[in-house]
Length: 287
View (tube, rainbow, N blue to C red):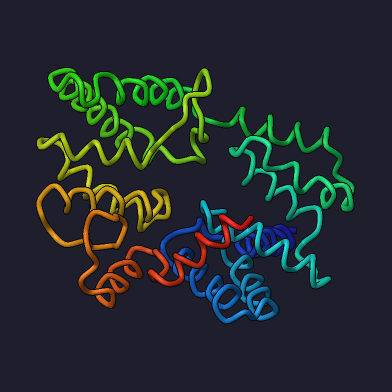
């Protein structure tokens, strides 16, 4: 009996381990860039689908802004009549697009095809929202509003507000990690938009706290919690302020002097190359 119990326990453990998937990190993001390039630059959707299938066997899906890789995977696979996981995968998709308002509507025909009606979609999105961190939502609603108070009109108030927001951000790092979309969505109370790139850029003004914030953000980029774009925009804004060259090509106010080096820098934090990024932006605008 003990042997049977032990065997069953072993089987259960093996099943659990095989079912576990990694949280998307910088390795995932770099792989997405490679696959997206296969689809977008090399125009080989079939190979891209195959590579996405391999990726999602190893990682839980993410849906990065503008890249929309999981949406792309499902749309391409459905268009080619290739199995993408059906209903189970569509429920993951609902959770990934839940932060973006009415974005789900364009997928209603696909959801319906797989037996998920609009009522179920809305319920799933509501359940996702219930799982958000209310403390972070409340705190960053106040912080985002405070971030704009007196901006460019009252330098003393600006300095006070930046100091308060820097303290909030560091407190959040210690208690909750990075305040990502997964934790607090894209909008706060009264539909206040969480403009994280702008918010982080203003942290440069806190001379006391910025070095620590910059270091932590790079850690969160590597763990997959902070968008590489948000970090890159902040760093390049810092470069503008200090008359330094652009590191990531994320500003029109600095001439790009060495595109090869910038592409290497971009790759190191999970950003696509300048050319690839431009193609993503064009495709996104066309949509």
